[in-house]
Length: 251
Image 1 (cartoon, rainbow, N blue to C red):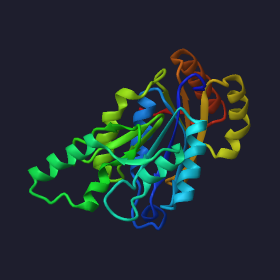
Image 2: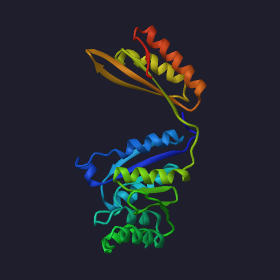
Image 3: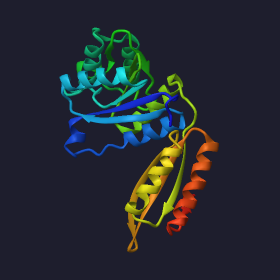
Image 4: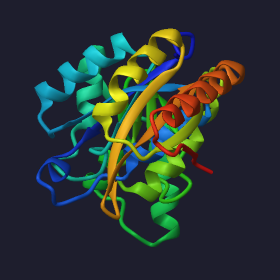
């Protein structure tokens, strides 16, 4: 569908996500905004705060996708190791970024908070990195080539992501249409496979539900060509109707 659009991967870094203590909400925001920007979110991974895992995963994904977005692990504590891992992945030293330090000095002075050694860790970046503005709490994220390193706290991550968006090359906007069918997936599977074969440029997905004692599926079509997408939707609606599935277009 979006083979000419840039692709992206999200790396959600943090033991607290894997343990269930913290529920991730960042992936949904990143994927939604990238879709609006014409970038296809092709993969997402949740990985622990383990250096060799972060380094290996980052190197694999940055070679495979146009953009990689990491969230988490850039705070002041000992388990915030993302900056160090990015430096190792790129084979460059970890340095104290002069501009990042200046930002922290200004922010903490304004709040009458001591800028101690732990807080200064938030000024560390790989050598050669550019900063990603953080208008919420000050401490910046950074970009290294096609890798954007963002905070894990959702409100801060969102602000950082919006700051970085101007640096992200988008493609054609990805449009989405949903047809609701009151049919079980087993009935839809064969005809839907045939329809997909006729429209290889359109992503088609089936997502089952069970409501008020009835089986059904949300049939989601996504593509960058409005004309082709509309044509596929029309055929899908007819297909569902012919099968007795009471097709409805989601508003």
